[in-house]
Length: 480
Image 1 (spheres, rainbow, N blue to C red):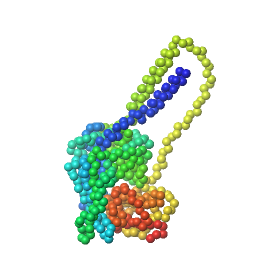
Image 2 (tube, rainbow, N blue to C red):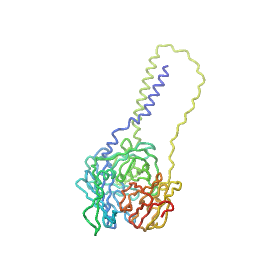
Image 3 (tube, rainbow, N blue to C red):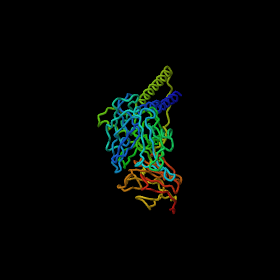
Image 4 (cartoon, helix red, strand yellow):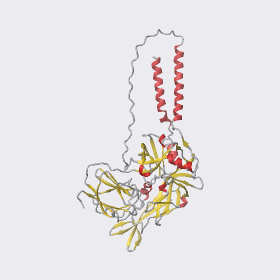
């Protein structure tokens, strides 16, 4: 009986030991990590004189929990792509700290009852309230990875440094993670005015405007949660190692941290895939390499964050076992030892097979899914693909880079980004999404699509890349 009780208590202790890491996680760590994140605003004058505006996220590095003036973000947040594919570094970069710090006004002219946008004649207008911002120096832009380092003159009040994982792969597949940042769609949805007549004309055509304001303060951080799906390599982006996860990200999250439940940065959110569950953060290892090169100090979690709590739990379990054994021995003293009983030969207990985790099969990031012919086609109306038809099934990505797209533009065609836009067929319906292109993706009425926002297209609907010179229409098999 005593042996059974002893075994039961030991078993319970071991169970507690195994579950100790779950209890050890700091429930406040994620909210505290939000204090290390800032919103970035960048203006860039491209080589052709046009102005590009970018908004993203950055996070502080240095001594954990202390105010800092060093922030890590994505390269594409503080650069803009030129028509020839080269990059121009932003000349003006700020951290946005207050509400209503930035307003964006899109403009379009009415032609035959339709609104038509043209960046050449009516570029967007940006109104920046710099009194709600802190100026930054772009300290470093990586040639190899999508990383940049920013520096402010003084540490930013209430913005602290986060801890970096020693290696991204200290995390594991299935582990819960959190994407922290400032998705632009949150502010645009809350403040958009819709299209209104401005009272002005371009020649004899009325001009309409659409204005939205970034009304979040620095503390209005968005946190989304998900799990790590796998660790993989993006071959089209310089063989960069990335964490695939399903925590929701949108335009504006770029450069923000992907953290674990202890608030430790394991990756930098950089890419979003064609499906909501396919989001990618480049390894935090690359940021550590850059900071080491710049000789910028930072705190790094070199060991598994659960190791110390686990050791402490083991010590507690051992102490409990020792106490139980002592009590049992003391109770047995003074009693005559029973005659030994000859035990029968032990019967071996069959081992229960431990299920092994199944590794997801890596599928090409931009290959369309093989499906039965649904009769949907993409017809080139004008430009490089005029008169050509392409079946629509799964995902069809369009752009300049032959490694990232199925429909590849010649390099001499101006205005087409490396990955410009993509069409996805879901349950027989076609969705169009701009992939953050420099010169935009437009619907037939001239409406420019917001980056990463899917729009439903029906047969007969058309769209253009950069200008009406590159136009496509969705049709049914046999249609015009």
